[in-house]
Image 1 (cartoon, one colour):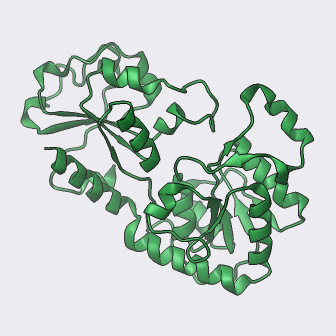
Image 2 (tube, rainbow, N blue to C red; image 1 turned 120 degrees about the horizontal axis):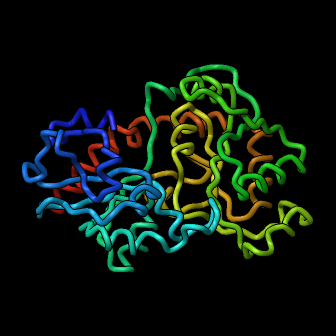
Length: 305
């Protein structure tokens, strides 16, 4: 939001959640007139928007845009199935004219459902994640312990490969911690086992658990790349569209068995992992910062206007 606010085309103000609950974007005490703008972008937690009364828009007839970083949950159960299919009805009820989503594949699926959508991928802040020249070794994982990540970590541990799971780390210290590692797992895979049978997974060898590549990379992929770690991720379509290449700027896999094989080979050739981490950092800093994403948001809106 800071990077968006630096662009002269935008005014950024905090959401008034009390007004939102009542179906309004502003309250009587604010000097904001929606009619002064070509587009109004709403960026709030989906649970608040879903619970809110239908937005009135105060007669505004410009672009009504929902920006949302969580619409992957409309199509994936990586976080659980509770919100599968929940977005289209909310987008329609609040009369948004288009959506900005952080997934390219997700954008395509929304469009297939008749919802106009643009892609604004996630990114990273380069002042917080830098490719510091330092001694690096092993691989690291961090973030929420989703099922797909727990299985990946178990597969790597079963192969006796050096993997560190970072404990909860203050965000401003995260880049410095990542600088200690050659590779970083940034996994968003979907598990190819029905929800009701997932309790059985602990009985399976981790590397045999069926999976397919996830729908979009999360911010940790770009943070890892920005910090000079070689990202290790499932072979998501979005990553190829964003310029990342397997064996050059990240290690990709389509099964947990392949993950173990590629990570083992990489850790056995640390100079190769270091070179991929350097290349990933160069690409990330050149094309994938939050400043780049802010400019992309502006350009997407201008095309629609």
